[in-house]
Image (cartoon, rainbow, N blue to C red):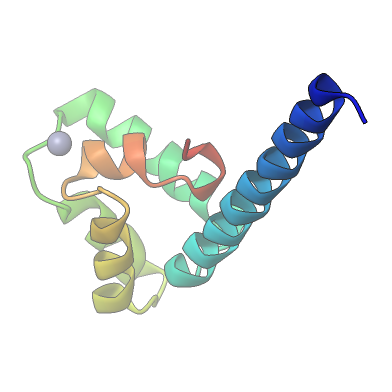
Amino acid sequence: MNTVFVDSGEKARRKELRNAYKEQQRVAAWNALGLDRAELDALYDWLDERLGAQGCDHSVRLTEVWATERDMDWPTLREALGDAGGYCDCEVLANTDPDQTA
Ligand SMILES: [Zn+2]
């Protein structure tokens, strides 16, 4: 058996593990949010529009309006967004997409 081959096999195996782990994290993040792709995109569009017009006031006020208008579980959503690094409306827009985490 040649060493280079073993090394690349090991690398591939690690990469696979890493990808599986990332995928797990991604699914867990979506579950924590309790939103689907379409809902999250709707939230981002909505925030984008309003933040462009009035800027971020360092609260999640706009996100809260969006969630309560749609009768969502705001305390749970707020916690999930905070866990993802979304502590204000502009951070929600920048940090909380489960499909965009590194
Ligand atoms: Zn902000």
